[in-house]
Length: 572
Ligand SMILES: [Zn+2]
Image 1: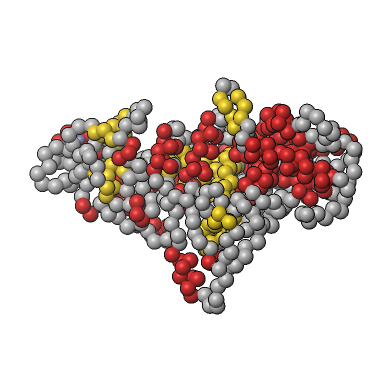
Image 2: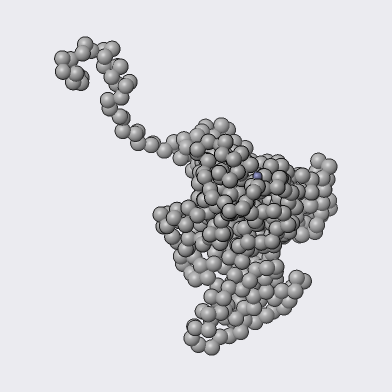
């Protein structure tokens, strides 16, 4: 028998406005009409609550700051509605003592349907009715169209601990992540140093994926998380929540030290993927992003966290590139350096450079972690210098992903007296020295296959322009922070259900609620009215900027109004 959740019958009242927002999200998502045929039983007792009503109640709960993803909270929300509100949302035969059980039955049924693997035809495409589709449909429905203004997202993952209890010591967990994720050596160090005998974590079973199950939560897996302010890096058992958050576009760059970003955008979550910890990150994220693009979200550039660039190219980089999505990313130590390349060019740090690139610009050190801006700029100077020697993409990619590249002398990025043709460029083009005996700058345009350029990105790695572009990651970090304390706290106990499906259903509403909150504060900050809701929020009184004095407008005004004073002083 499962322990019964406490019921206090009393709930906080819900405003008409909250119902309006919540039902707007649920209705726009389209999930009710897609799922109803599977959820509604043709025979049996008529339901005392509808699927639409259930989802709206989940969403009302999740609109509130610091809510918890507990079914009992949703039951309290329903009990706190007025009879009138319940009637509009399809709750009949209301009995406060029964609400929890009724909601639970329908919630369990919904989760079962999402796990059954139904698919329906939608615009000629087969749409799987799984929890990834469900959660992304709700999350996207929570973003007003006028707030989707860029075609870039930043992607990052955050850990979510399972509610299931671990029997034993967390440091003794066997790290069995999929793919190329390596164990963090600092863990070993820490466990060796810490005192006292360790209880070996009890393994309760092995999942169909061949990985250990440590808790009563059969979907939760062992993972590794990086340090935060409140706790050190280490192992944990649970899930990883990957978020794609809208961020600004790079609208122009000189590929060296200058970048123009588009206007500030609302940092809303446009896609999410909730997976067992240690799941291959490329698999967890790439398909969700490609689906987002197919669903009509403008998506050309993804700024990824260093954790994702560890992945081999075929699982993430190539997959996204083939779908027309560029990646901006940080290279790991092992990915850096010079690689073999078939053509007459150098392949360094993922980028093609002229084979005449001076040797002192081949291996460049990155600034130390946490370096000041001034130190970073110092290190970047060399990368910026090297960027002038880059080959320029002349054409492509074609259907196979092949690209054609032009040499920097022919392109006019650099000039040298040895190549008189390049000297016709203006004096703004940097003059470089090339080795004695170099007769030609290149032997024409070269072709590269995608397999040869697995780590290529538009802006050369390490340059100032690259760092400024990477800075767009900040929006996903701020979304993560909001979901780890500011808006809700996805820490242990936020969910009290087990399993990917049950947790993701709750998470979808919480992320949608975060989006509503983010849009509201973005509109308030930029003093934008919601076109559909003129009373959405009180306009914050912004102190008026100090009026400047002595402007031309002042002078013209004065001269028009008053005769000039003898000494030219201002007259009131
Ligand atoms: Zn050339």
